[in-house]
Amino acid sequence: MGGLIVALVLGMALLSFVWTPHDPTLVNSSARLQEPSLEYWFGTDKFGRDVFSQILMGSRTTLFVGFVAVGVAAVVGVPLGIVAGMGPRWFGELLMRGNDMLLAFPALLLAIMFAAVYGASTLVAMVAIGIASIPNFARLIRGGTLQVMKTEYVIAARAAGRGPFAIGLRHVLPNVSSLVIVQASVGFAIAVLAEAALSFLGFGTPPPTPSWGRMLQESQELLSSDPRLAVFPGVAIAVAVLGFNLLGDGLRDRFDPKLEDHR
Image 1 (tube, rainbow, N blue to C red):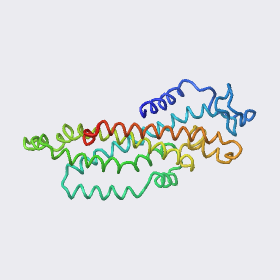
Image 2: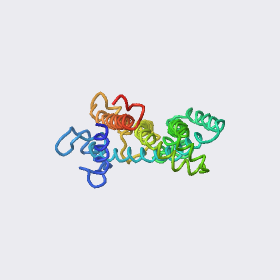
Image 3: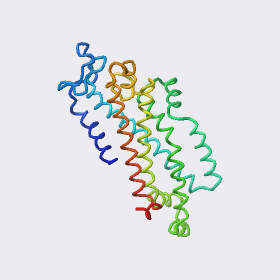
Image 4: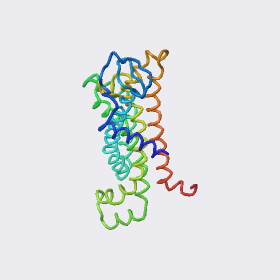
């Protein structure tokens, strides 16, 4: 089910590259606040823009931010976790304490700090979410690495004189790759929520690029008179987060050997 939902969101993003019913950034004052119809499937917003077209293109923005943010977190967090798990115990503990310090800076706070220095943009949102997600990857991969380092084949490789880099690349990384996949899926759900929150607060994707979070922000003054403007992006965010969370849970059940007896 999670895979189907993620595939649906991905299909919406890919479709937006080749087709949208209307230009999602076109302001048409004569078509303001139109109800859903054959011409405007989800109606129009207070600027006369087609809501359905904005939902389609907003999925592209959300997935782009998620891919880059999770990529940044994985590229930094996975090697950091492997090094912390393979190195001396004191070195690993030192890295983890620095990792814990980074946990004190959530994505929203980092984005506000970065926006104050570099200005609000999609790049700021991606970097902030990615940096905030590094500790989750590092801690998880370190735990997996510590388990792999106790296995007989790693002990045999060390006895044969194989170096740390070769052991990490040949033995550790393949055996923790399933953890990376699961954490990436869960991290994607977190990135979707974080991007929506940042755009809602004005620190994410700037206009006129459509964003689900900014659609919510623009609709809040019309909640009493036209709640559909908040319902559509809100449901899109909820469905996307649900899909990635279900996918992460399913992948965890599939790859976690501890759950083998419960299947």
